[in-house]
Image (cartoon, rainbow, N blue to C red):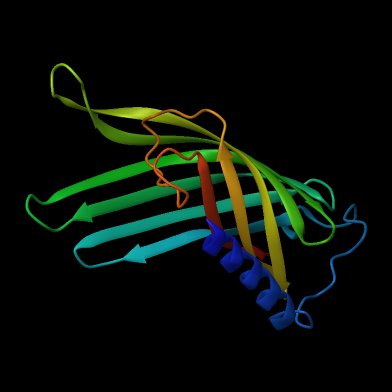
Length: 187
């Protein structure tokens, strides 16, 4: 955990040096902005190929309600496969609603309710059925701007704690803490 914290601090420090001059200033008052100018998009894209294949496509669309507060929706598709013996694979999909509040210029508070649909083996029959898994995330993070876009890193806690949650925590198998990175792009 100490190494993960050191990595997080290093990324924040290096990114603040790297992008310090590249960011355009946001207007103090967004009341005059058009609907389109208040929108932003972004998300996560994860790819890994080999013995273990992993694909994560998670776009978001957000709307700036005020200068510091925004809300939006997200979609998610995850495919993972183990190419060993036996070969196994799973496809998961779902969506989310989120809100963000910016403070101290580059820090953010984040809440998100997500529903993931995935196949699960039933305990008594062995039959595989698709089920919806609720995930309630709350936490915060840091964002660093470059132009009208941002790189962000967040530490999120799952309030619901459903044991069927498919996410793997970098803090251990029993942890409900998750690390998320992504890019946000303004229109």
